[in-house]
Length: 112
Image 1: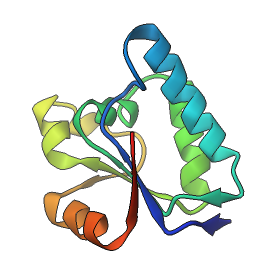
Image 2: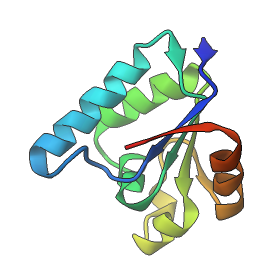
Image 3: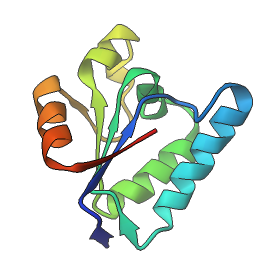
């Protein structure tokens, strides 16, 4: 699989608000998983870390498909600790501020 050298920076577990926002983020991630050219990295911060620690098997399956295609997935360690869910991380790995900043300064960023 080819990566676009871009980083997807997810700031929320929803695109927009409410139930529709949850449906949209799931659909968006599913669409990413089906692309020929993928982001190099996905960084989840704030409530987006809830996506990588969820019991929602559909979301985890989508993330696993993306990860298996070579995309690195990171969840903000401080955010995981804030929500007290670090031990519930199911996909990807916990990141730190230094790695996130390095990525943000060296890659093209797409923010949601």
